[in-house]
Structures are given as structure tokens and as C-alpha cells.
Amino acid sequence: MEEIQVPPYFICPISLEMMKDPVTISTGITYDRENIEKWIFSAKSNTCPATKQSLTCIELTPNVTLRRFIQSWCVINASYGIERFPTPKPPVSKPQIIKLLKEAKSPKLQMKSLKRLRSIASENDANKRCMESAGAMEFLASIINNNNSNEVFEEEDGFMSSKDEALSILYQLKLSENGLRSLIMSGNGEFIESLTRIMQHGSYESRAYAVMLMKDMLEASTPTLLLSLKQEFFIQVVQVLRDEISQKAMKASLQVLVNACPFGRNRVKAAEAGAIRVLVDLLLDSSEKRICELMLVLLDQICQSAEGRAELLNHPGGLAIVSKKILRVSKVGSERAIKILHSISKFSSTSSVVQEMLSLGVVAKLCLVLQVDCGSKGKERAREILKFHAKAWMNSPCIPNNLLSSYPF
Image (cartoon, rainbow, N blue to C red; front, side):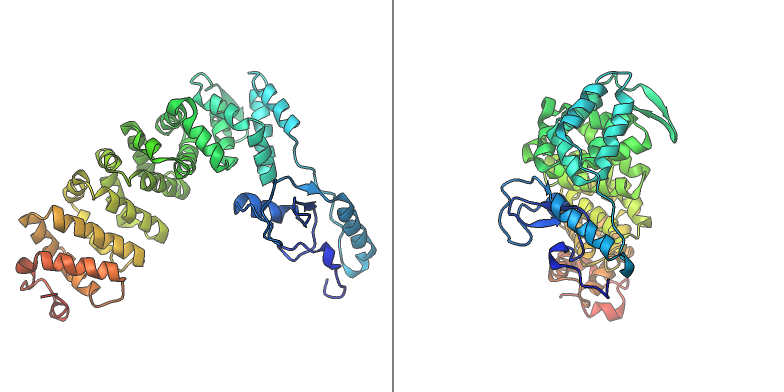
């Protein structure tokens, strides 16, 4: 490719590489299909990358003439080591999807049709959007909601029910924001209850898919829906977190709870579901930065309720483990850990708690925070905690002399 100049109109404006499947968008600009699909669907952008104009529609029209020119040029220049790429497979059409959905309604053809739908969804983002517009989301949700759709079929890698298959496809579709909202509102919360049952009774794989799909749904939800979440929902999400099914499922569980817990009522439900104990136990052995940050964010949210603070103080290692994460995770992690201790010292600081914080080295850690760069908010809260209990702490032999100089008298 270095010995021959590629015609500039063969080059995709996004990747700056020769196009294999050129498609033209509503602005008249041609891109390689894979790149423009990522731009529109994954990055969720509704503008033309080259012109910055808004897209009047997201239809991608194959530029067959240009593709043939590129293929012919590759053949002519084969002596330079340029290989002709095969003619790309055309994307699926809406009538094809509708036909498959009709076939899937037959019990005898359902599993075969679902497997075909999964294969189509895995090919590209355009297929996913075509499936959504053809009604695949509603059909898959109906299978998941149907308590009688648990017939098990033998697969090469084990056994799977049509409900399991439908759930995996629905997650794989990566629904649009409108699609997710439609799913949330369908059946007056019926779908969320169905996912809650799967988290309780499903296989490990299905429980993981359920909580990952729930994460996507809650990110597109409204405060009204978040406030309507039931206690059983929190219990099952916490159980998925406790079981450590996978890193993805753990992260999704944390994000679900973080999205649900800006509201006081939900913080109480999370505390009563045992979230504090699970989070502290997991935090002890966790070293992955993002996971630790999410755990500390969630602990901070729940500890803004009296029930959450009581659960943290009832855990034998609660204060010690939170304090240990200060200056060991990230600036965000340190600020959240300090904020948790701030809530405890301001609202739940009995004399025994004050002494426990001293004996566990929490006070010494807060003095250290004042000496290092860990963010202005973290330092300010650490200073406030030390001032709250100055009479009990500042003359204690538990504080090393090199840190005592930092104590805010």
C-alpha cells in the first residue's frame, strides 16, 4: 500500500482507510459501513462526521458503484500485494425479521428462530436497529414475561430455555433509549418483576444478563420509576452482587444500585436488603479501581440514611475497611470514603464509635489526608471530622507525632 497511491474517494473519512462496504448517508457523504454504524449507533451521534449536519434519517444506502470500483482497482493492483475484498453480505431487512418473529411464535420452531435472531443481532449494529424497529423487543419481552416459556432445549454447550435465549438476545440488541423506556413502562412494571424473578431463580448466566439489562434500563428511566422499585428487587440485585457471578455482573449490579439510590426511600431498601455487609466484605479483597470506586459511591449513598450508617457500624470491619481505602484507590475513592466517615462522625458518633475510630487508626489516616494531595473536598471533610471530636482525639497517644502537627486545632 506504500508503493501505490489509493484514490482519495476510496478512503473512509472516519478511519482514513480504504472502504470495504461503502454506504451513503442522508447528507450525501459516503463512509465505510462499520465506521459509520459505530458513529451513529455506538456513539449515539445524529450528525454527519464530515459536515456536522444533522441526519434527517439514519438509513444507510449501499454505494454499489463505488464498491465495484474499489474491488476492480484491487484486482488491477494485485501485483502490489493488494487483495480484493469479498462482496459484503447485505444487512437484514425488516420483512425478514417479521417473518422470523412469526415463526418463533410456533413452539416447535421457537428455539430455532431465536437462535437465528441471535445470529442476526451479532452481525452488526444496523441489524440490531432493524430488529428493534420490526418488533423484536416486544416479542422477546413477551417470552420473558411468560411464566410458561421455561421449556428447556438441549444445546451443544448445555441446556437452555427459550426464556434464557430471549433474554440474551434482548441484552445483545443494545436497545435505543426510547426502546429501553418502552420496555420499562410496558405492563405497569411487569417486565422489571420478570427480571427480578430471573435474578432469583435463573441460571448464573441468565441472572447476569438480567442485571446487565436492568442497568441499561435504569439509566434511561425516570425518578418516578426508580421510586417504585420494590424491596424484592433490591434483595435480588444484592444477591447477584454477593454471588460474584462475573466482573460484568458485579459492575452492573453496583451501577443498578447506584442509579437507584439517590433517593432516600431506596437507600433504606438497599440497607435492609443487606447491601452494606456485602459491600464491605467485597471491598476488603477488591483491588480493581472502578469496582472499588463504585462500591464506595454506593456505600456513601446508603450511609446517608440512618439505617445504612447503623449497618456499617454493626459490621466488625466496617470503619476499618472504609478507612483503609483512603489514599489507596483513587482521588474519587478517597473522597467517597472520607465522606462516609464524615456522615458517621456527624450523625452517628456515639462515644464508643469515637473511640473505635481512634483505636482503628481512622484519626491518624485523616491527619495524613491533610498532608497529601487528595482533593480539596476530601481535605475539607477530613478537617471537619477532626474538629468535631477534637477534645477526644487531639491529645491521644494513638496519633503519631509526625501526624499530630496536622491536627486542625
